[in-house]
Amino acid sequence: MVLLFVILLSFPVLAQDFNTEVQNYLAGKLKDYDKIEFTIVNDSNLKNYKIDLSRELKIKNGTAYLPVKLIDRNKSTNSLLTLQLKLYKQVPVAVREIGRKEAIDADSYSLQSVDVTNLRNPATLFSPNSFRAKTNIKAGQIITQDLIEEIPLIQSGSRVTAEYIQGSVIISTEAIARQDGKANETIDILTSSNELLKAKVINSHKVLIE
Image (cartoon, rainbow, N blue to C red; front, top):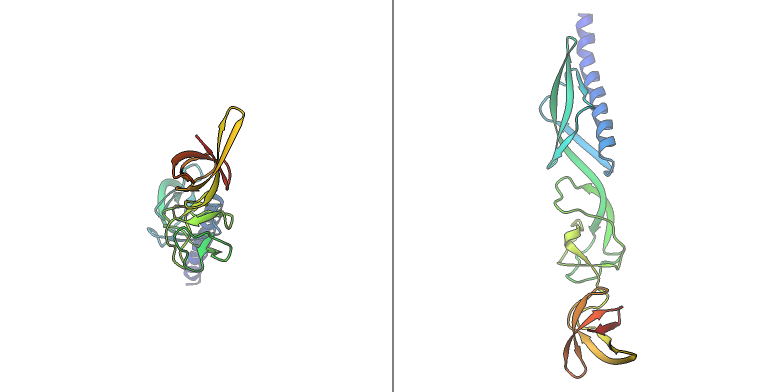
């Protein structure tokens, strides 16, 4: 009876040791995440498994396939354990609604460690006031790359100085940008004489007529 009690008591200890081994293994493989939670789906008994370091861990849609060896009576058999993952990462989360084309400042979001397991588009850190919303972003929504764009040097409707260079002669005129434009991009401008021309963006207030 005493022997049986000791054997039964050892099962949860073995399971706990293996869970710790898996946790450390995942932490080494998935270093980009703040926290990793997992549930072993296909074997709750956690027999005499050993992680097989000679084979690769595979992950798809929040499910990991952990290569293991099952040791039974001095025999080793290759197997896979299915893990359901929850992956947490520090990402920008909107703290208020951000309107379309609105610049995203430091008060618009906060960095939070959230579950990003099923996030379709990546979320990366960015500098405040350098990006704007492509579409409306709801409060509490993770700010992913597909929701933002870099603020252009020149925005549609802005007044700019348009220069035309011919030889050593530089002609300047006032114009209105008809399109957004980043550095070296070509945009449409409307000159003070009501001409619609193409011009290259030089900086935030000057374009070069092509």
